[in-house]
Length: 318
Length: 306
Image 1 (tube, chains in turn purple, yellow):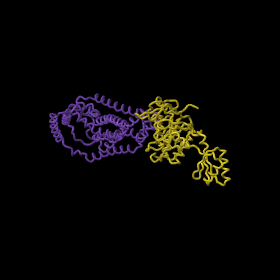
Image 2 (cartoon, each protein chain N blue to C red; image 1 turned 180 degrees about the horizontal axis):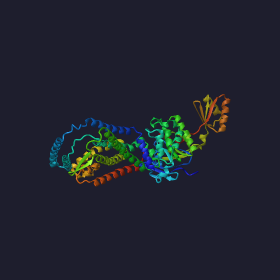
Image 3 (cartoon, rainbow over the protein chains, first blue to last red; image 1 turned 30 degrees about the vertical axis):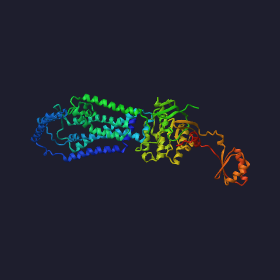
Image 4 (cartoon, rainbow over the protein chains, first blue to last red; image 1 turned 60 degrees about the horizontal axis):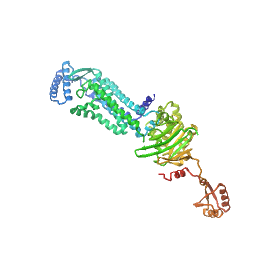
């Protein structure tokens, strides 16, 4: 099938470029660095606070949340306070210390922040995979063949997604291997989360898996956005800068907007963190998983429609 | 003549108010090397972009092996192998990987085909080196190899000799003539360097400011007076001129350096040589002046070469 061969081509080009290995290297380095830091800073079981100590701390923390709950002028801050109190109470009742020995699951949990890095890499690849062909002029050789423009663009989009999934797999597997060697499987492997004051106890493994799955969704949306920007403006730099900026400040802006208006719930970034529905509850009151999925699909279709429209209609004059 | 492999019918291209190509029509037949000439900015590359479907046609039609490039893109483009402007290959891939890449985009291109093409363009010895280390001539040859991978019926090359050294140009020319003959492929080649085209092409079209000026055979020599223009090189041009004018007062001639320019028939030239030799003038050489493609080009475009 032609599309498969095109994807094979894109994959070959991707893995013959230095940049790809630099990205992989940085990711591996990141995983190694967190392992080293955690390994030398891990608490000995004798150093952990005693039951009395941590229970006391949690009771004090809850008093603080009580205050926050009363004074909170906003749904988001209020939910945080309510949920944290619920979790702390749950810990006291069930004797689950917030302090724990490091094990493979807590290490993998810590490494979830590296998914943000993968987001940046996927944006870089998504932005350059089209713009690069225009910069080098090779787009002409791609287009003067029987493959339609739609097929060419689709192969590039799918390749970018596959690359994102590949990086996620590298992060997951590498964290698991390093974690199990350095930290082992001992210790608690429970993740607590609360929605509307209701605490759910989950195994850490499930929680981590959920996070990885949910990040696939945000990578899909980000890729589509970077793709749209780079096909419309044909500028690698612009697409990377704009998408990375949105990746980092998009959710903050949405958070700030959410303080003032409910309209923030239509922002793409208010919806990309699907795992929130299973863990801490939505960003804005009244949002549901179904709502987020619909909003994300609308954005995805819009981004892709514009990319394909511009790519198909354009006169190639480079 | 047989059916044309490429046919342009009243093709127009407008971008905004600019009318880049005006009612351009010409045909390219199987097995011929067709030159597409014009000064820089005449619209050669724009036309080629329309032929290969990179740019939309404003009005008119382009047929490739009978299929319209705008309506039946897939069936039309199948017959074309092309390099548009520079031979841009992926610099970070090796020559072989570049060909594997483009081979995958066509049906039935085998490893052996790729090897065969590499040998034909004499790049076999560097096939596993990255293209970024190639000279322009090597890139140009690799470009031709990729264009020929799927055995197209017509090869379209935009300024293939641009930037090549004389040896490279000659190599390119010989190679193109060879494949045109051996594989019975048509070649449309654009250029603004006319002396090269003369040695390469069977027929050519000249365009200027987006309009077709003329289409003709390279070997066309219909103008008699030009065919009879001769140059005679002698040792003493002043003396020779006096002798000639005494004997043939009706002839027009110019003396310049050691050269005498006359318009005369073959038979007359014979008696000139006898006459001059008998008067102890040494005749070094007599050349029949040919009108070059360049002369015809300048004539057709009224000397407006940029």
